Amino acid sequence: MQLLNQTLAAIKPLDEEAMARAQAHLDDLTKPPGSLGTLETIARQLAGIKGEVPRRLSRKTHILMAGDHGVVAEGVSAFPQEVTPQMVLNFASGGAAINVLARHAGAELVLVDIGVAAELPDLPGLLKRKVAAGTANLARGPAMTREQAIAALEVGIEVANEKIAAGSELLGIGEMGIGNTTPSTAILAAFSGLPVEKITGRGTGIDDQRLQLKINAIRQGLEVNRPNPEDPLDVLAKVGGMEIAGMAGVILAGAASRVPVLIDGFISGAAALVATRLAPGAKAYILASHLSEEPGHAATLELLGLKPMLTMQMRLGEGTGAALGMTMVEAAIKIYHEMATFSQAGVSGALDS
Image (tube, rainbow, N blue to C red; front, side, top):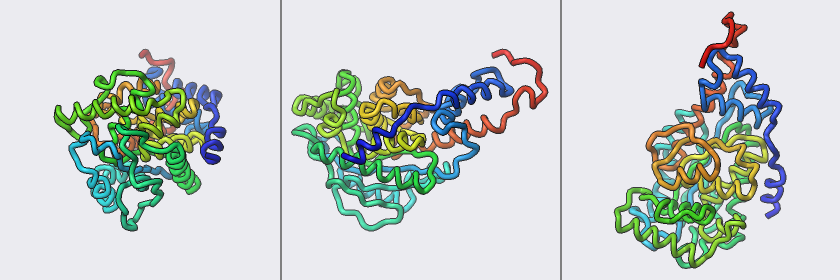
């Protein structure tokens, strides 16, 4: 708990003066004001985080948290729990979508076993930080103890701090865990009060029968556990997941160290809900990469007050959208530093938008 409390206390507001300077420069570039939209927003946010828009990102790290969920016993997923460790092995061998897109973005991929319900071999790039071998069934009782939830948050903080200390200037988060859209939906429902049937999606492609089982499991979990939305740790422990907690910890660590964090889709959005309820100031350090096809994701981003960079009909997870978002961040940096200003280009007057 000490590490968590220290991290929360270290989160400070953005540098408003740096953002104003960045905005003035953006407005002087040879384009109508605001015409590059989200790219300008990203540059301004980077200035607020770093004190100036960096000329380049020397190191980028994508952190993928893996954990299992006892609620799969309720029949909420089309895939068995054994797929989680199988996919971690695929990540380690470089064959998954996130491997391809992390390479495309020039980002280091770090795998973290925070709660896989199997013993994994020693693998390149795999950190074994297991809090427990999966969560308990949230439909029947708390998914985790409060102590486990805190421990999982602190794993995320520790991994992020290690990568930041090694020079990482941009973090992305992603996950692997069969059944994890179920706790994510439960977290969203607990914080928002939205009807479960309106925000529950098909995850990996479940049929109507499994969708109803999923809705029932989430409703039952909320009824049995009664998570307190005023206590984010209570929500996380009772209806969350270890990989969700780990990603929330990465967000908090990034905010505390003034390093931007790219969130991915629905599950990392649930992690962002937890992080920003623990520390509202952490929101300023989050970049939303894309809008997932999962119905709960749009509601999550609205609750967070974040706008996604991309809409690409994706719903894979793993942090695939976050990896693509890294390329958008680098594009924003290049626009800021490589475009000419009106005076430099010898263009008189401002252009009409």
